[in-house]
Image (cartoon, rainbow over all chains, first blue to last red):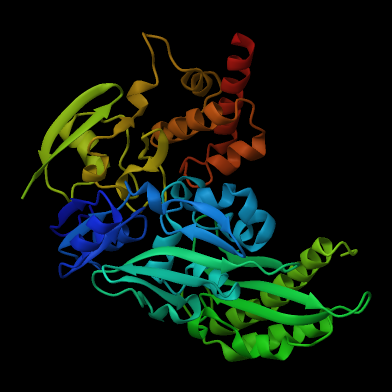
Length: 296
Length: 158
């Protein structure tokens, strides 16, 4: 029987209330709880105080504001999967959310909670890194904007400090961009063996599309900040096509740092990175072409 | 240290003084004596502990009872109404949807939730809905048939 350590429970009634509760030492935010409570049951996390933010409806939204998609930290995985606007602008979110945990867990687990858990095998960190999103961290002094690519300080560590709360994730909408996420897992609900996400903005003339910018995120393979920066750099200005994508995949595989574990040996994971990166790029490019009105 | 937790379960209000670390599944089984919900893997993998919290299914081994304070919970004990079994329960009887029965309460709570949203789900939609739950007897074929039976029965009744 797994029992968490003794803990105090506080229920936040507003964001301000949550921030004041979080200023106490050794507190943890309790959102969906589907990462934190298992960690507490294993005594890997032993906070003194839990601050339950599930009642803060003002943090649960997905909306378009100008040229940004804004996702409240308390939006559930199922909300993101159900969001038509998110799926239209960023198919990568729907690709990823279909393979985050399972349908019951997705009803409770939150987008912000996944980012703040900062598990190296967590899917959305790579997705938001690929999309070059920004995290809005709220404190009693106001908001701080931190690029998601600087949000993770290491496994289970983020830029969110004591007395602060991740409030929102802002994703820049790139007109005509295409995106995709490809994951290999052993079974439903399991962490990735490896996964790759891509966000592509295409340019160039008809019949000869070139890559203006590429965002590539990698999950569970020890990529710094979940990003395949060298592959992104390689792709800038390249002609869209299998050759560019396969080379980018090989570069991504060469620059990440997977470790052997029960999900597979290192060489297999590198193989997956190469293949899944190329597949994600191919699908992202196809979707960008469809959005541009050209044949995929 | 304990706290007062008041929860409406299947329409009845219960209040108990419990430790904040108490999990909802143990609150239901040990504090309230509602042992229909089963405590299985304890790791949110198997889904035998699925109940509804505020009308959404949840794996109750992964929620604190404190989080349910002031909210409503529905368990398998509440499926039957006025001596009348829910069509999902009838379907599990008719189609042999259980062998050992351990996963059954969670499967039925998820099935009822699915049918409330999607009264005529395809086999693929049923399989997707229960994909986070495990039947260790591997009786998935009959579970899917049971849910289809319940969908058809409800359709015929309308």
